[in-house]
Image (tube, rainbow, N blue to C red; front, side, top):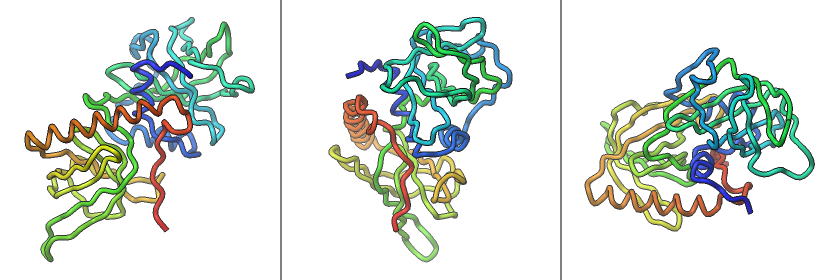
Length: 263
């Protein structure tokens, strides 16, 4: 069984399952909002430190990522050493999609593969890098429903949506409803499997229009918690995090796919 570092665990929890997406769409999914665009960065600008975790994705639609650790720069080539070697030989990368957890940043970029030497992949320095800060409380991917109760002129309405991720301070969900707006307040209720339920007031933080999903929108919310609710939310978050970290050694289970629309 592969031994995972804290960085490996956090990166795995941050990443959704590729679910056979083309690489460009997958990059867009990971960086839905708030990304900084770095053009022609020099290695020092990326501030990647030895030992930090990375995932490499090739063009094969069934490639769900190879976990690696950053070794350093070799003549401005990015050197990534696989955490474990897969049976059946090396994947063919050529141009690969790479994510690096370079705290406090998550980096995502395409890079040209140069060669495999002395147990590590060597990639050309990327020409364009997307970068965003990781949250203080990392969101965890979670499957399940969330119930939203909204006040309308016609009275109280109920919307059933699909959870995308969750933390002790907020969550996001997929929906077909086009009328969610920023700073709207409503009541939400959802269950964390094997941990408990959460019911609280929430405020819309962002609304993203999606092109990669059968759902039209991804809505991010911030919880408005009392002190007792905050303690309950933190308990649920830590409970779910422990459950997911326990599953990380199973490569088929530690990635989360965008939910499919019910038929």
